[in-house]
Image (cartoon, rainbow, N blue to C red; front, side, top):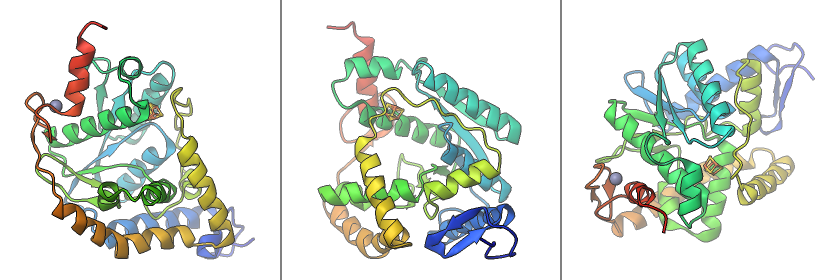
Length: 302
Ligand code: SF4
Ligand code: ZN
C-alpha cells in the first residue's frame, strides 16, 4: 500500500478516512486531526494555560506531547492512586516522560491525602471505579483552579467517547448526555474541561505513541473491570469495520443534534450547588462526596 500523501510505503492504514500513510505523513495527519478537534469545538487558544491529566497511559502522554509540539502552554498533572505495582509504574512513566520533554509536572498523592484507593475499595461499598473516577476528577479540578490553569485536558479518544455515549444512550441518562462532549465550559468552582483527541481512534493514538517513541505504562490496574466498556468498544469496532467512518459520524451527529436538546432539558431541571464546607468545591450537599469519603476513612473501621 502507498501513502495517500507522498506515495512512499504506507505503514498505517485508515479505512475510515480512505487513506494510508507513511510515518511522517501519519504524524501530520494526527496533528491536523487534533487541530481540527480544537478549532471546530473552540476548545482553547494559544493564550490558555493547559493542565493535562496524565495517567501514564499512551493517550494522555500522546496528548501532552502533541499539544506541546503545537506550541501550547502545557503542564502535566498526575494523581498517584497508591495502588500497588500499577501506581508505581504509572507515576514512573509520567515522571520520565515529563522530564524527557521538559513538561512541568504536578503530582497529587492519594496516600498523603488520606485516600489511597486500596483503602477506599475496602471501606466504600460502591463500585470502586466510579468512586476512583470521582476522586480523580475532584483532584484534577482542584489542581487546575488552585494553580490558575484555564483549561483541564484529558486524553479521551473517539473510542472512549463513543463507548461512553453509547452507554449513556442505552440508559437514556439525561444528566450524563447533557455533559458529554469534547468541551465543557468553566463554571463557578469548575475548570473548563476539554478532550482534544476526540476525533482520533484508539488505534490512531496507539500508532502516534509508537511512532513518537512514547514509553507509556502498561501495568494494568488490578481493579479494572472494563467488561462493559470493552464490550461496547468491540461492538463499535465491528460496526466500523463494516461501515468505515460510522463512529465519527455517530459522535458528531450527537454533538450537532443531540447534545443541545439534552442540555436544555438538564438546564430546566438545574440543581443548585454550594461550596463544600471542607474543601470549597461545588456540591449539592454540605460536604462534597470526596470529603465525606475522606472523613469516613479517617474514622476507625466499625
Ligand atoms: Fe481507578 Fe478503576 Fe481505573 Fe483502577 S480501573 S484506576 S480503580 S478507575
Ligand atoms: Zn469537599
